[in-house]
Image (cartoon, rainbow, N blue to C red):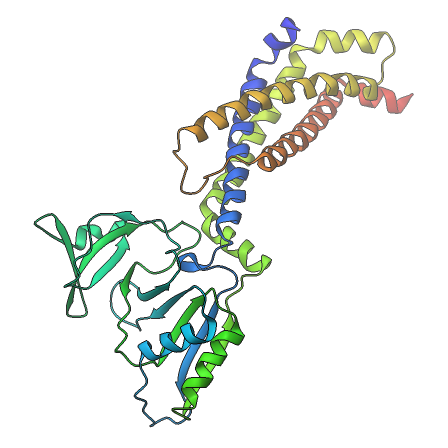
Length: 349
């Protein structure tokens, strides 16, 4: 065993690097897949998109957002979260929100207490430098109104969503696009129906905001595009380096191989013997690389894209190392055998 470790030290280093990189990469992919389950802005898979408009192009309505909220409360009598799109504009995306016995779905860092005399806003941490600081408070100018910044948040890299959220203005027109979480399509349609009794031109379209497995996979691939490219390139270069060092490893063991050939061993016998020792090298190296990956995860360097260290990721990484090892060892033995002319002699016999 000491002789095997001494002759395999470079090979062990290569597989430690492969194990470290692949374990972290697969954990990133699996973490991103988990993060892709919630919809944008923290909405659940049961959320409903509601587009409220008018049946006639030149028609108008006096119905307000406040009346919609009242109808939703009367119909459901339960908790819900409501977002309203603020329309297309130049600058960061924004949404208005309303909570009814419901927690805000994003993790908010509270900066200051709310001032009842001024509108409030919660914004992405990246936008905070754009706010005005005065007397211990932050203020943000949006559409001609000044809002007090009462909290900041950081969207998950995979989920995405609005850059800031303002308190909903109940006096604005009911027309627009909403996202409602916590209510069924039936509850929302009942609320809209009560409003249609007051304005027959009012129409509504309901679209479930569910995210399919295919859609989640596409999101993960898009979000981790550079990780995937880096992983592929790294595996190509590391694989070539591993193949070179495996051939060198066989060269160092040529005396042992020759002795086995002299006593009647075939190439298949040699390959099985080398495969057992190669498997020990891969397993030991993988254990070291996996431990290093776990220690790196503990530092929280990759917390945003890898909040969890996945056992399934370890399994995928080990399978990758094993497949790469089997291919590398098999190719190297064949190359070594051809170089020594052993295969030609066996075929001639």
